[in-house]
Image 1 (cartoon, helix red, strand yellow):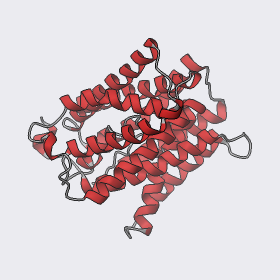
Image 2 (tube, one colour):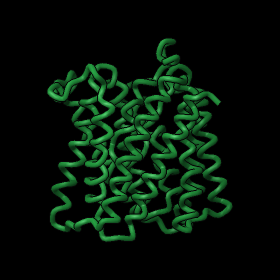
Image 3 (tube, helix red, strand yellow):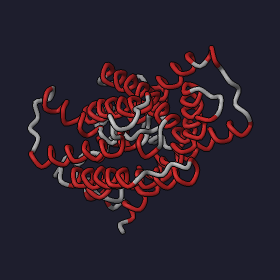
Length: 314
């Protein structure tokens, strides 16, 4: 297995562990806004250490596309709130299966707003992903919760974020994209959490610190992966989160899909992998349901086409 692929699998494993810890807060007194605020706050430390040497904090607000960057901050905020709510209210596997519908939203936006042509096989694979999601969630046969709508909304906002990043990431500083995204999440959630603020216990504080540390480490590992493997090799690794969701959900939350659910998840994973590896030179790594608004989504544009030879050997 190429080192870059192994590193990407490790990164997505770390992200999934963060999401499982977030789900664990659903049984406590912390609100979604508090979870979002503190996990983002503790993610600042790894972000500081991963700052490119040629970028400076004083130039964070020097943007070439300020409106798009701030819209990306807003969509990151909304997606962040929606996916955290989904994690704490519905099974992890169901939250992931819904959030992985982001490519469908990207294709719809590409067709209607960017006037791009989409091949028939891509439409087929995306349709399979949608069918797989229906088998997992089974609307009409099972009661849907607000968490399911939250995960679906997170997929939409993640798709918008990915579309914007494809345009701005090549020309904007990474420090600006990360800092502004975290700023939106921390400021807005910081204000919203005031009326119902719950002081974290020592255990909760340590878990929130662990989320920040693991998420930040995942970002570092993921960036290293993009420098050691082609995007077409890395992109399918994001679907490994489905397997993490099944394992962590079963071990810690007694969430075990039934036979139809397993079949649906298999279809989601299979169709998703076939979709990303069949996309030629425009392989995309979509904004995952990341708790901090940073991570693979920020790096999406960096790996949206085959990497130069010097980067793959770095």
